[in-house]
Length: 304
Image (cartoon, rainbow, N blue to C red; front, side, top):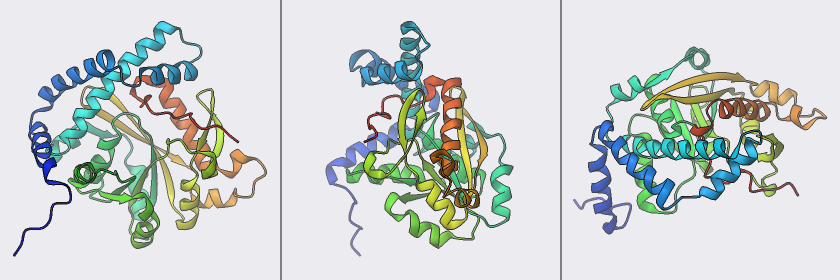
């Protein structure tokens, strides 16, 4: 019998071996690697430094330039740690990840599971957004899935999908979201969406003030919650110390509430789930600004 064909080009095999070998290192060693990544990003390459400063200045107009630059440096150190932590997903023991991820109020999730109800978990690029999916799979017995946008590079798509699913979570390509919800309807599961991406005018977003700037948000959570009568939770995650995170759920308006408000005259009332998500995220960013992904151009689109 012939061996199955590799899902990526052969010359990526050494890269795979290197990454898997690095993942075997203890986190204490990987954090030394993170320090080198931090120095490279913050002082040598200065990766998107102008974007980071612009985002921080606009989001925190009351802070001095010294404070803004301090938050920027803290962000790069946080980001470097997240990079090696994501790599560690290739080898981390389930018990170790569970020890490092504390769910403050898991009952908000499990009570919906007891009713065989689907839960939309709305998160953001804050804390370690990749660890949440695997941590939830362990915490809730494999009942978690995450929506993601497939990468164009076959090797990195294969590698990242392996990281996300290794500990029992499902990884759902964005275009397969509806099919997944139909297949899993009535089984008491949760589907995670990172809903802080920048939606453009062509996406018919919900426009609102977010961190002192007008921003467009995708409204897919509103439509999915209504169509499948989902409960909706905001997922707040923060780093409490190096390698340890705390996850707290906040109940948001559910699908029935969103359906009832769909014809409201005020736009904020028509999108109660998205509006509530934005305010929860704002509160978290003000509490720990360095733990957000400030390198992405969250406010690049403007309302037409």
